[in-house]
Image 1: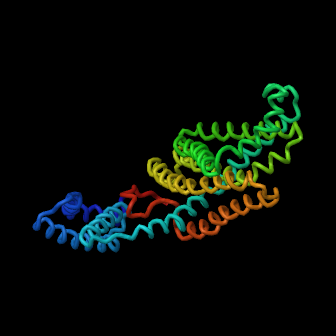
Image 2 (image 1 turned 60 degrees about the horizontal axis):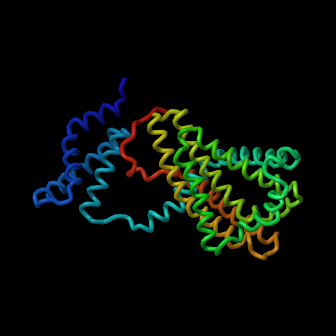
Image 3 (image 1 turned 30 degrees about the vertical axis):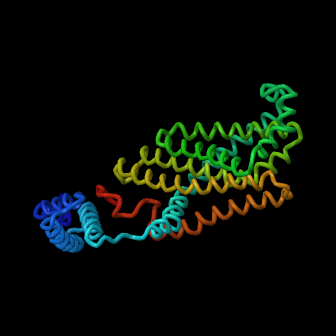
Amino acid sequence: MASPGSTDAEALAAVHGPEWDELDELLRRRHLSGAQADRLVLLYRRTAAHLSQARTAAPDPVLLGRLSALVARARTRLTGAREPAWRDVARFAVVALPAALWRLRWWTAAVAAAFLAVAVATAAWVASDPEVLAALGTTEELRAYVDEDFAGYYRQGSAGSFAALVWSNNAWIAAQCVAFGISGVWVPFVVLQNAVAVGSAAGVMIAFDRGGQFFALVLPHGMLELTAVFVAAAAGLKVFWAWVEPGPRPRGRAVAEEGRALVTVALGLVVVLALAGLVEAVVTPSGLPTPVRIGVGALALGAFLAYGGVLGRRAVAAGAAGDVRAEQRGDVQPVAG
């Protein structure tokens, strides 16, 4: 049985729907004649009154969303006013991105745990099994790797060009997680592939008694860099899970909401990965003492975690989810519960 609210909403739409459609059509036109502009003003006033009526007599989510969007568009068209760009940027930085990061915290932790488990197991296997070590290269090749190539990688070219190289490489890994996350297969593959690569490098360095050098060169930038990759992987997996288990939401709506939040995360990670690349290009190969270099990396990671934790928890408590504003989402199908 339909609720009284849905019945009132249907009645309101049946009576005034043509006027709303006409207003929408006028708003889509780039140029209006004098008569059309007068008609737009009239329809804007009527639709605003209908919105007020719907909020009290017919609180249907779909109807309210449609009328709110129409009224907002008409007001902007008539007044020529819009929110300053800096407010959108501020909302993104203070509300949307932290909220998305906070909602991903357990997914990120799960990805990080899986990555570290594979990396540690791979390192132990490579370092302890001579046959596995031999399969990675001859003794001369491996000796050249630990003596020259590993440390030399961080000193190639200028700091600026190296930072750009690192950023593009890590951004590509994160982009794969974002773009193909809904497949449910690509993200685990990328995470596993990179965990094995890191573990193999660590295993070779440890086997040649260079474990300290490995951690001294990897930790300063790696703590923030890998965390960013974990977040990207978590975002991709969360979109996949929204498709598998949408909960009370329709599947299309669940995927759309998580997808928009994923885009928010992707944009934020551009900055995070740029910072990690800067640390890798400037701090990692510097002559600073190892504790200082690792301390810089720890501070960068701590700042990122505090940003997502403090601001994110506050934003989610206030109802944010990393999605765009309600008036920008369009109509949604109401759900029970």
